[in-house]
Length: 92
Image 1 (tube, rainbow, N blue to C red):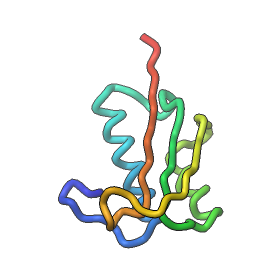
Image 2: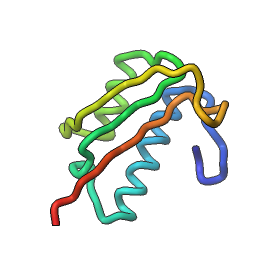
Image 3: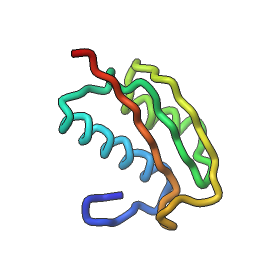
Image 4: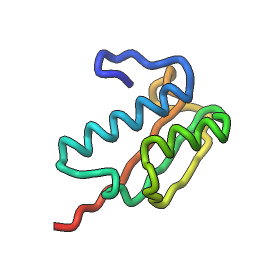
């Protein structure tokens, strides 16, 4: 979801926005992409596999955290088609 509460229509755009939100949170926590240990994707609809892989690779680069993908009937916000949980760990 955008800061202003808007949600893009397409699941692929929502996925890109979710990754941007994760990156913003990482920066705020003084963390990096490499600190992501696990991603859980919750998807309401199927996203073209190659397009999904490209958006994911554009965000993660060569970093490969553990990943789970779960297809669900709906998410808490009816307009949302994608939710991504990112778990992180940073060595001090």
